[in-house]
Length: 339
Image (cartoon, rainbow, N blue to C red; front, side, top):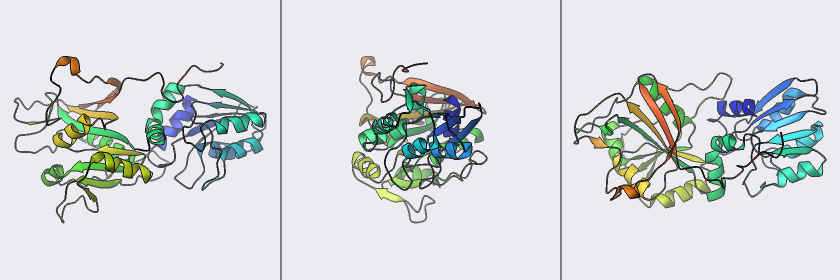
């Protein structure tokens, strides 16, 4: 299953709005064949692995997400699995999409295929968190990206912030953009930094599809000659914006907006994940731009606490990823049903 998850990670940037699914076929002779979902309209990960395996009679198929049972731009994965002769399917988590939601498992079971559920469920749910969130809430997963000094400042008093972090961190931030359907910034960031918000500094893994630039969205208005164009300009409720993006199959969005935007979204409880790049720099005062603007919590008992789910060194900088404390009722998470 972890081989399947590694395959899924390689194509994270290219499958939306479809989930980034990895699969492995282990034939009766012990040979393994790995597959991952192709860009929208292409084969799903299970079918890619089955096609690579050829004769899968008696094989075991591992997949990070419940196989689909509905016909769309591709045929149902369950039917391809049944026709292949696979004897056993091992699934990490169920798919909360209303068109699947256990129906894929039921179809395989009805066809006489043994199904094992819950293998590496927590890890797979974490990997597919944006997709699961979108299917359950109809809103995109919101990742807030912040670059800050060790004393918590994102810009100098004059508004300058380029470049606080090093090239490795900036490249990784472009990877985040490539894995997002849209990137959201505030009008103030556009005025001070004039960002292009492209993925120009990140190269996808060899053998995977090219990265695409996300849809750019400005909260407010952008000058006609700003590099962020073409973009969507939005002046309404950000919650309504997320509703509209979700309805348009935006699975994940990245917020790169400054202190005002982050403060407003955080207080509205609209952020699902923080990715914070910490530079070994100190601005040595309280007049630099903070991570969040506006009124914060009044007392320590009201502090919002998140789980640190990843820490990584990127050149001279450190990346810290935060998510809300894990819920035991997260979809698909649970004890594996057998060995």
